[in-house]
Amino acid sequence: MADDRTILHEFKRNAEETLRISLSTFKGRTYVDIRLFYEDTNGELAPSKKGVTITPELWDEFRIGVARAEETLQAKNLWHHEGKQ
Image 1 (spheres, rainbow, N blue to C red):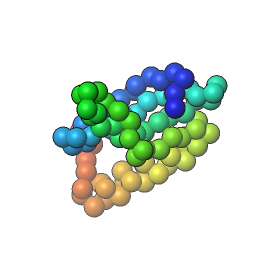
Image 2: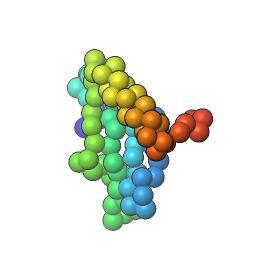
Image 3: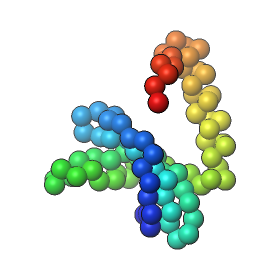
Image 4: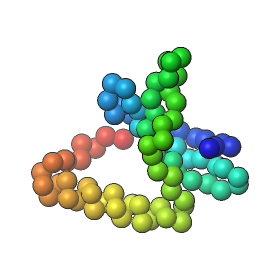
């Protein structure tokens, strides 16, 4: 997808998958890409079809959804912020 890609953050989701957040440029447009990667037969991380690509115009809406998820998890005592960055 990307003409240019900057990895912003990634972490292991489980033994087989890594979740990666990156900033991508494709055909002159910029996107935030949140995608699961898997280890291919060569041991390299390869993108899966599982993910979402968000335009800057929709970023505020996405953040609202994440904030609501965070609030709900905290209210149900399922998560608390550990100050990790």
